[in-house]
Length: 349
Image 1 (cartoon, rainbow, N blue to C red):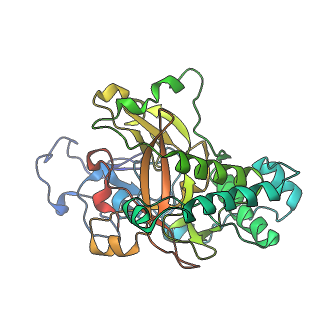
Image 2 (image 1 turned 180 degrees about the horizontal axis):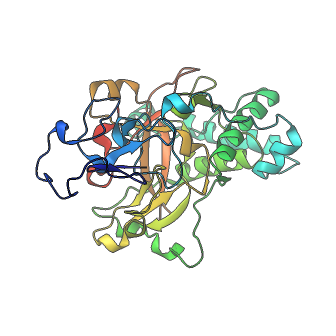
């Protein structure tokens, strides 16, 4: 529910003044409810009330922040801290079915492809390598049991959020057609991913298809919710994952999106052509990686991923790439400052 002037949603008005009274005044004393984090009652449209204890929290004071008011029930960190999601069964057949993994992986093909990319990189001169960095494929954990545990952690988060696994952009019939995703529409142009970069991304996709997942663990934090941690050392410039979900026009999602992070896919000169990625129904591990404001000193220190949009075969795609070496156990954060007028990034920490 949302805090509204002189009343709370689905609650009677505790005062007799008409709701329009004092609308011009913006002092905290005018509000019935204040935020538990910042002690301010300003911006009531962004003041969310817990459905259990009725305490208020600004959308932007929560960690992670919420983009808009959830449509369903919402519980504050204190009331939800004991609601630990049920873990997905650590059973190989169930995990294979959940992620639709191919049952007969040819691991030699994957190794050969990775070695081939490495050999191409070794032939490059030092001068060229300094001039143009190249993307690296992620390096899966060597232990098959550990990979099962990593995938089970992702399955737990997806199931708890009622999200189907998908590792590709989805174009829902009757909504946004795939033909709308044209990188040429990007305002100011979009960088083209090199052929070697395309091959590296394809290798990452192939590894995931065969159950060779990124070395990441989704963990449940009672305060922040689901977050993602590195489960082994990750080198700078490694592709972590592609940001995927349902593609939709921005205009369709400006008012009714229910709180999960939308990602800009296409920032066109014509506003009617702007596209976003919506991970609320279909997505992968990218949905649970936290965005951060890299304009602040603390944000810059914590950020270890870069969100990069590429032109790949004429279509816009979004990749999350390591922007420095990442240690095992380190929580992942990517920058979300592309277009502040579209998303309240000034509130990230």
